[in-house]
Figure 1 (tube, helix red, strand yellow):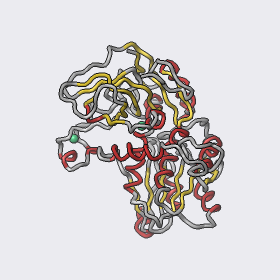
Figure 2: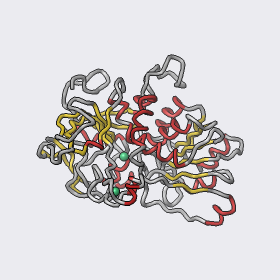
Figure 3: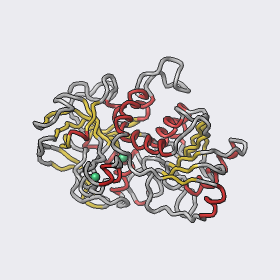
Figure 4: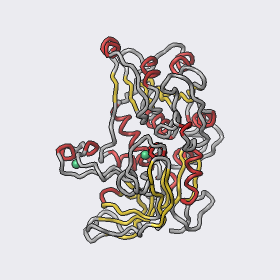
Length: 393
Ligand SMILES: [Zn+2]
Ligand SMILES: [Zn+2]
């Protein structure tokens, strides 16, 4: 089968690999339909996130069960499924208290990082790491379930209340999903973003969107709020903690999301102590979040009734579907990465977890260069319908 294999920093190629097959009695073989391109994939290719050379990349995927081992009970051949790529052992101390996200036996189990992933025609996984896609939820929306699980985990860690005023830094796929989920409770959600394309997309969904291009995000947001500070800031850029700390109200919470191993910020602990600010990192999502993300995707993936749920001219298409802006077949994978800003070293200030970098490490502004939200690589070669997704499976 064809698979996109990571060779080392800066290089990957399509290879012919042995077909995925059942190994253990509880394994399933999933024929992959599509995989969302994650900021992590791009950072692996940029050499900024460690991965095992020789591994098949890709982890945000949907597909169809093609084979099941003799012990498999939760799915049958032909089921449409979404992959939960956050594997865990189930028997170590953290796993037994439910903290599967901190499993002590992660090495060799990270799908698309050090265990073969889903930019391929098929993948083999234990059955507990696939979930059925709800009937009526198109693959095109379901491909966002995994990032939605990440977002839910962070929003839950922040304990959003009806009283909260929220600012989300970054309107990439993770930023948009964070704003959507937080808005189900918070009294007000403001999205801050420097990239023109993403600003336009954000304005279709949210009433409060602030253009922070060429300016300090904290100042830009405060200008539009009349100086009112938010009680909760999500930094989905991975490089916005400094701005978040200048923006947050006394007694507020700052959730750091996005990954950028090159970003550091000087922190005075007294600032947290005196102002009562909580700094929150959620880690990976726990296993019990994933089914919640599946149900929430069914909610957000449902067609809107005319006149509801959308701010401007995008018809009744479900919100989730509209976040998927580009699709490419497997053999055109390099175009998929180009749509997200490319893979040259000059792009390094951008592309943290699919969201925008607001400031560079030296505090200077970097020109954003996105013209996409979620980009999907399709593995399935079969005939596609008007929406670009396979019609016959
Ligand atoms: Zn991801
Ligand atoms: Zn474990």
